[in-house]
Image (tube, rainbow, N blue to C red; front, side):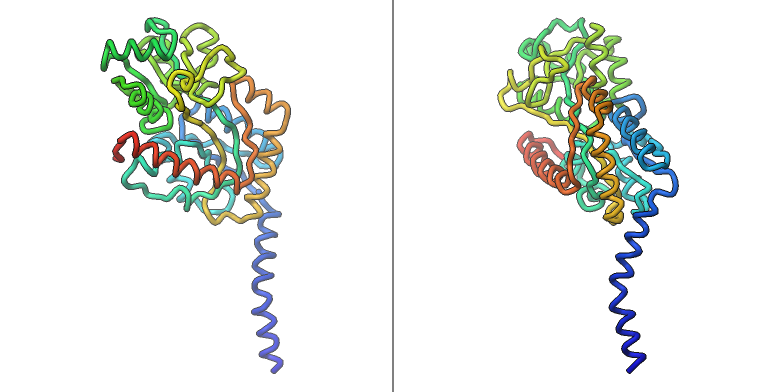
Length: 324
């Protein structure tokens, strides 16, 4: 009887012991550097935001957050690297709207983003902007549409990656406007903008933070934002929706971790990231480049991901875009 009672107490305590182990693990975290996978090359908007918040997290957590740029495959290379990592809190993934588009653009992916990546926190909404080289004789979306109709297939329209939200935005724009342009994908905004300034490509959909310095310098011309509302950063620049009713492409960013990462660690990361987004210095840096902080709980980010995945699946089907 004594043996059975001891065995019962031991088994009954397993759940508590397991919970205690998880709590202790979270309390000791982090004990070594953390890597943050960014699925784009260095020098672009995502890299800027990751390094800005990465520095904040390094100071708050007492361990270095190392940015690891893994571009390629329309962000899929970076996602796969994160999915393959241990679920121990030492690998973060820079997530973004493109991750909700890819399930409808690719016939087969080696992961299920919603299932394999757990949401942690939002980062910022970073509007997309339609810009052209000044040599292109257009100063508005309506003029661009008219020019493209008069010169079908002659405008090289650049995006910051094949089948990214930038590339898809161009595809949706040409279908909505009834025009024919040549989509030219680049591995990130930095090389895209170099070629746009030089005139190698005539138009582009880029992230506002990356394009802003070139717009202000007069090196490229801003036609419109793809967001629902105008930005205070460029108050005189309209939205595409002001010309094509209902047109909007929302670009947001966030943080994810491999599914199975302890809840205590996810909670800690969420609190520290949200504290950073509330910091006046970080808010000011984001505002300077047209970014708006997105303070989300893990559940709120998860709801955004689920909603956008369904929304883009419907939009892609209606646009007649075939998965590859």
